[in-house]
Image 1 (cartoon, rainbow, N blue to C red):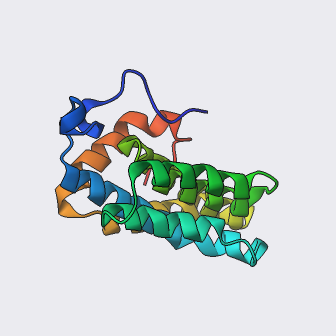
Image 2 (spheres, rainbow, N blue to C red):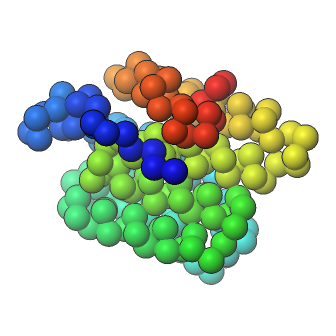
Length: 172
């Protein structure tokens, strides 16, 4: 299910590309997305301890925010993290996808919600069936506690608007 809607929300398009998103807030979205992905990374690493691709992708997301790599390099890292997910299932797969979405924020800021949604789904998949809903709510609440004030309302509004394409994981 695609998480990016058409037409794209101009609040997630940078000013220099005709939208309203500042570079500073674009970086904050990437930092937050990386934190969401990193919070569940252990679910991937427990299943694939030798595979560093998702961890490296999260590190590259942060490197992009510091201007150490280009958007193109970050964009390529998203494919690398997604490749790590390819042969997996469950929580490990979803955690790798969260990493891929986090680094993809450099290319398309609206991927921030994908990183958060996949992280919530990873936590749900790792929990016993009777605890999945509550585990997802706790993860969602943790993510919201990590939101910088500068982007808080933007992300919360995005969660409201795209919750239906993100498996309704933002009902917390």
